[in-house]
Image (cartoon, rainbow, N blue to C red; front, top):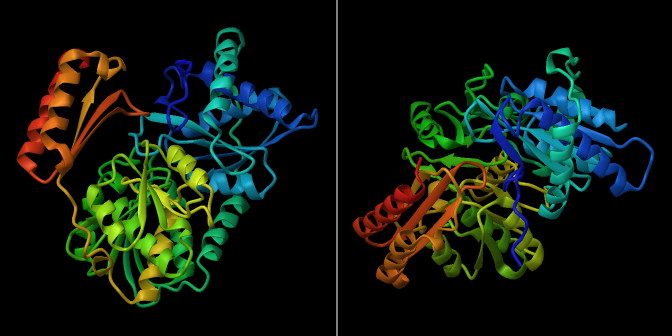
Length: 456
């Protein structure tokens, strides 16, 4: 049986241009109403439930927070704001401070015009697909039938700075004994949520840390900086004669690295480093790592040489987590830099990942290049095609034919992964192969076929 279509929630919450459906005022207010009602039902209580809000630095964040709070309060919920904090900070605060839910207002790596709503439960985990789907009907009903207040009439929510401080202390406590003295580090905060956390965090840890892009204007988040543009921090590592670079996305739930050779080190390499370290310390349960369909074949080969198995999950950190829980895995993540360490946190945390890697470097006395020296990366290309609709690709003869042709030609010497983005109107064509020319030929053929049938 085909699963019901999701109208609002993608793989990472609701995301759209701020002010436009489904991030218009009426729908945002309806999300607050539906979440409040859902929490009352789930907790089987008439007592007020408590919800924690956090946001990134987009200029639309405050009014979206005010609309959500208005909807929640209409149901009797109590709302508290942590202000500008990272997505994993909200997950941590929901889990440890007695909140029944956490709400993040962020569009992660998207441009400033976009925003989004991500929901966490009291356990600090993202709400399951089934719960979000169940909420959609009520959200759509309220959006059409409830009178939402004018955002301009709503008071600005007062932020509780103590909550941000609690999260910073959690990060420090998660890697006990870490001192960065003697290390020169460059960190790119993407003019996003990390810009509110990193200065105090790294001040307390010591070391010589140069922070980039920590002056958000509301419109410069992810703008030619951060994890989407890791070459920026890679160049700055050389400029500052640093040993390592760190770069985060807008809500800092992921991290990429840069070495001393103007080289970018992505999530695959981070998984390799972390997996070997956990295995050496007897902490890699089942000698297993969960990655995604996008992770490079070179990672799988390098892990195998270390006696570590790799399972692949669909793209999306929630799907990685599902496989990790199913197989009791201690480590998982994505090539994009979402790294899951369930013994430390319930969700990907870019700042926490960076501290774990810095601690590993300090303990081993090795550079990040030395730790990943044997990782042979197969050539990989990703072509993004803007689409007007998400029609099943195997139902389109020209697209299906191009995909089958690539798979037949590459056989065991490459991989073909075609999927729709869960957060943008894009079809992603990923091909990996030993022969780069052949790889690009097939990627272009598939992309052109999709563009001809579904392109904007």
